[in-house]
Amino acid sequence: MSSAQDLGIILEDTPEDVIFPPGDLYSDEPPLETELHLRQILLLIQCLEWLWQERQDFYACGNMTIYYSPRQRKSEQFRGPDFFVVLNTQRKIRKSWVVWEEDGKYPNVIVEILSDKTAATDRGLKKEIYQDIWRTPDYFWFDPVSLEFKGFHLLDGRYQELQTNEAGWLWSQQLQLYLGIYESKLRFFTPDGQLTPTPEEVAHQEQQQRQQAEQQLAQVESMLARYRERFGELPE
Figure 1 (cartoon, rainbow, N blue to C red):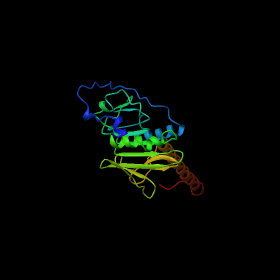
Figure 2 (cartoon, helix red, strand yellow):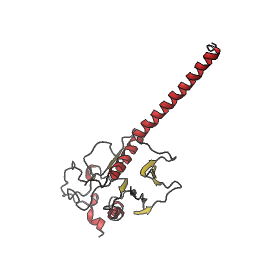
Figure 3 (cartoon, one colour):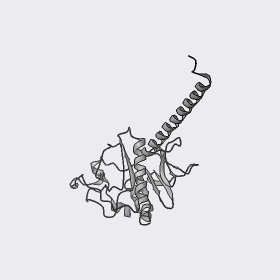
Figure 4 (cartoon, one colour):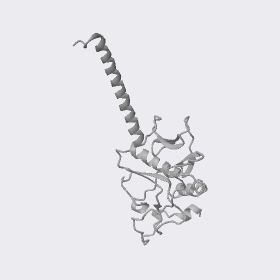
């Protein structure tokens, strides 16, 4: 049996007499490595939630424990993904993601933010778990320091490495979005290549548009004033 198989138990193979632990387990993740890691995770969450603000059928979170073995309260050998998305579920606040309380659902998309301490595990053991036990369709990793960026899609039970497009982005079939590096951050892009903004970026853009409109109006009013000085009031 592989090391990944030792770490998880598929729900359908669970005996009927197993006592399930309570479903309101708190997340038990260690602190993030750096501020870069925290900001990157928050950026992904904010952008996706803004883009899908009208949707109520997904859950996106980060640095949260996913409990998936009904025989134990938590796994000491595995901690939660840095960022993950579950589709076709209820959008609500959770303390943690407990698979047996979520209709057996695992993440559809996972992004790990690499660090010196976690990179080997993210590239190895976690990748094996996500492939063999969770069967997560789309898996990506990103290093906020070196900007290493790779992605995989599950095909016939095995992860196949994704190839970048001309812009260096990778396509997520589950999200129907590209992931790519923009200003040294991992960002989402729409199928037509538009950057998915944060709420702050949207507000800034709207402010700039208002300022441009005000400047244009001021220019028109100035031109009208000069016209009146030379020729009088405009004809009716």
